[in-house]
Image (tube, rainbow, N blue to C red; front, side, top):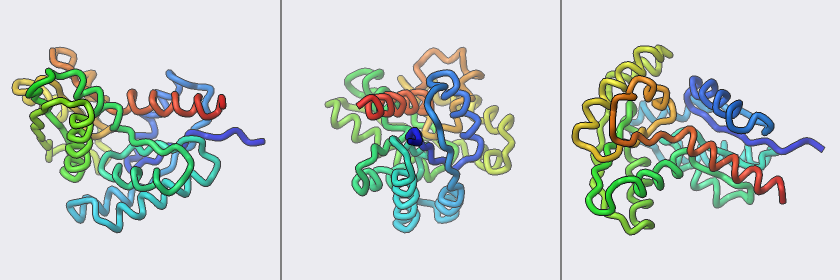
Amino acid sequence: MTEPVLALVHTVPANIETFDALVGELAPDIPIRHVMHDALLTEALAAGELTADIRRRTAESVVEEAENGAAVVLCTCSTVGPGADDAAALTATRVMRIDRPMAEAAVRTGPRSGARIGVAATLSTTLGPTLNLLSEAATQAGADIDLRPVVFEEARAKLMDGDMESYLSIIAEGLHRTAKDSDVIVLAQASMAPALARCQDIEIPIMTSPRSGLEAAIQAYRSICAG
């Protein structure tokens, strides 16, 4: 019998390397399947939003992985994350969003009243889903938060060109500016996480989605497969 996999649905090719490294550190025994749907993000960027059609196709892509031997499906793209939420209602397989654990942690980390949460992105299409997720987490936690979105627009072209060195450099510079008026910073995209290596002098917490999201997916996978 084939062992069920943890399927990772990506829209940015660079995330494969990021998650391979994390899986190697956190759970090298778990079989992983990477699935790339970069057209979903490309089209969302061209449209300037997550359209109903892109959201529907995201859900279909996630359900397809769920029905193809996956014990857990993890969507690593925040922009199309709402489509993953839709997919969760269409399959018995566990479907997760990479950024939900991060959002919940950010709300818990900041002050209980009026926490200033800097929400940093390089793609404007990511902001809406991330802000909605943070608001939802705050409501569930009974916390009062002050969301402060910022987009490092100049980094977008570097990401699309695969120039990760320039991409991460622009993000690091932006995070140093954002930290001056925030209690906590949330990185809205998994691809931004490697920039933290350049931000070790920033004293406020910076929350990222890859590790916390993958840890939650690993925990779910082990629970499901143990049962």
